[in-house]
Length: 159
Image (tube, rainbow, N blue to C red; front, side, top):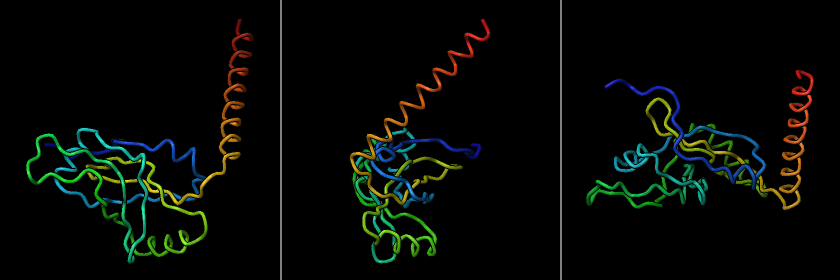
């Protein structure tokens, strides 16, 4: 069997980009059991309620839902167990300092396979206020309308 290459997306947390200002992103490995990997290979996972936490010099991923493997036996994993994140010591030390600042948190953005290994993209984020969310949506709408106007003008020029 040929070795996997490239990036295969499993789950994405789109709501995180809406609810938080993303300051920095990190690619982390995950410590998983065999049935978790098999369940992920079927493309089933949810990052909706997930968050990362630094505990005792280690990074942990909480509330990420990886459903039980359907062909699993008594060795199956629990769906929402906490999972260890694999980061370099310097990255963990840097994150410990940053997350102690008020309003900063670690949020998972994407779960994917990279060259056959399960990875999670974790972001250092700061929560948005309600008016920030509305402003972001307004900017997105304005950009979309401007692009439509430009493409309509180009179509009129060609005709």
